[in-house]
Image (cartoon, rainbow, N blue to C red; front, side):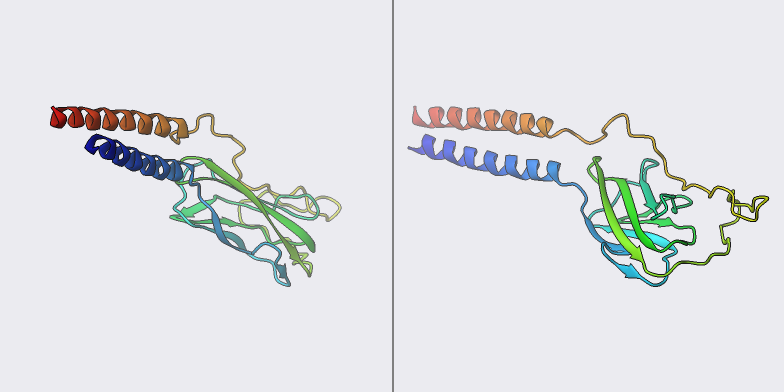
Length: 194
């Protein structure tokens, strides 16, 4: 009877451990808030996009934020900055009114990429004057129109390897621990019953 109780106890602890490990292994960063928020209607163009996550984001060169305007142009510029769980990307001054799409791909705390899209609408056109940041390639052409806009510094490189530990490794480890615990429990039961 004591052996059966030990076996049940070991199985119960192993099952709880397995569920806890698998839950942690499957937990990726989740977006908590953004500025601008999804569905916002803004009269004034934001100077940057700020994304706040529930866990720290890995400060890796694979983090990307792109802002596509209603004209199809990219409006994010400069480096994507990571400060623990807050990701910030500066924007060129937005001009055309309409819907903008913020697309991001960040490296989660557990090593897995997380991506999503957020949409906001600029209800009034931004400044028509060229107010590009210093060092960009915006210049007036011979007809007085702006030359092609500077593109965002968004790295298009996909990570070749996934630095996170696959879930199957955790499951195999839990099964091995369960087997070891069960073996110890059965041997202890036999030795006390003799």
